[in-house]
Amino acid sequence: MRICSFNANGLRSAASKGFFDWFAASGIDVLCVQETKAQEHQLADALFRPAGWHVAFRDASTKKGYSGVAVYSRAKPDAYATGLGWAPFDEEGRWLEARFGKLSVVSLYLPSGSSGDERQGFKFEVMRWFRPQLQALLASGRDVVVCGDWNIAHTPKDIRNAKSNEKNSGFLPEERAWLTALLEQDGWVDAYRRLRPDGQDYTWWSQRGAARAKNVGWRIDYQLVSPGLASRLKDCAIHPEPRFSDHAPFVVDYAD
Image (cartoon, rainbow, N blue to C red; front, side, top):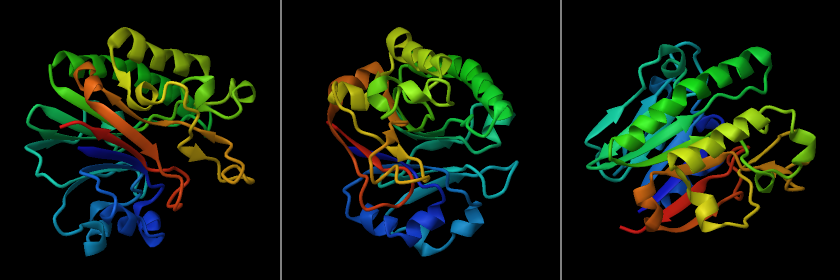
């Protein structure tokens, strides 16, 4: 099984750059998209609904053309869950879970705090509320893959310029400690880090300057998996080229 997480920074924009051609040839079984930046009726064209694929969207209802997540799958899910029961989070279009038997695959878009103190405060509020939700998912006994843009670079290996970003949203000590707690205390497994213990690859680059050309990036797109799936991790790849977004698709292969 091949699962991909991709922040499109606008699915229509990514499509115009050839994303769906790449997707068709990728061998992916489940695609989790973040930042669709569209309402579902704006994605009615066949380009966004390829033949043979099941697709669901969770749009932002509070701000049109903002955020939004989607899940594409070859197999038809038994059910979808489009939120976690807290309106400030759900209505920004940040959670979509597809259930296949005992397996849940989630497309998650965790808030960014980079625009200022108000949104950073909301990000911290989400983090406090969200950890118990993730703990409950683990306690459910389901196999879970949470794909998405977590907007946190975990360690200095996950960011090109660690020292100069220690006071910036996405690499704050509190954010990194929270992610450490998910991994070391709660039991989630970072698929990339399990497969690439010493890897220093990135999934996002600022659009300012020549960050991408110089590979001055951050790894903020993850697939966190429940402990039972850790032994099924086979391989992973980040695809910075072709360029569809300021993020790169992150693909993980799981043993069946």
